[in-house]
Image 1 (cartoon, one colour):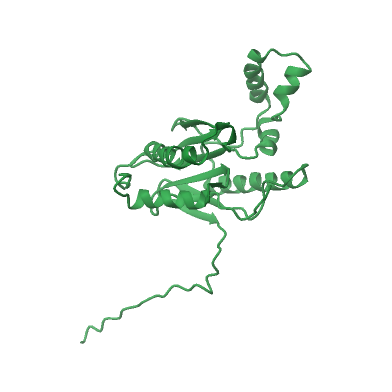
Image 2 (tube, one colour):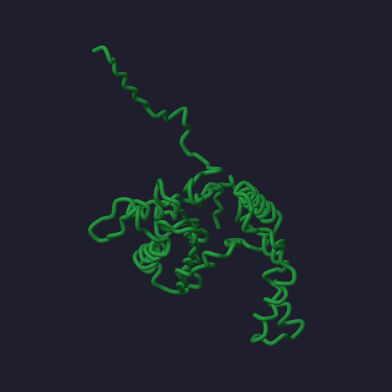
Length: 258
């Protein structure tokens, strides 16, 4: 197993629009990295082509439609042809989030390939609900926020003989009793940013000391999407030093006397 600390997991899907995507799981499909695939998808949303009539109308687009297009592009066109044997298909997931045109509240949709099967696009919560979603390596956050380990169902079944059919309700009851409600509707954006930073940093340190390869690490990237400011980077790693790649700035001065 190779573990890289500099994979890109957060993307702006269309510059100037309040919509973005995060990814976890497999770092590539075939020879193309997941980052390259998302950038190819972004180009289709920006420009479109003869096959993909997906160019976003800035005045009339929906987050759900973008999630559906992502499913078609990644799963139908790339994932299935690359991994034709179901048992060899790696897990790969995406969350597409943002504001549809003229929508008062944000939306989140998940597209996930797990065990070779597709799930989604699935709406994570209604527009009126406030909450938090995490994935990838969730053990640290599960224990802190939900109050349980991902291994608890197996313990309950093997040691306490809880019937498998009752496990979902038992787990739901335990989580509802122990979970920490850290996200509130009136939470300022800066506090939400700080919370996300803390939870990712916690997971990095948790992964470092767990047995096995540290599967979470590297610089933390954070983006915030708001209704009026749109997609804004909070933390971002750059591969190209700005001092070595300056952008030329042209200034035109008009003399009113000539």
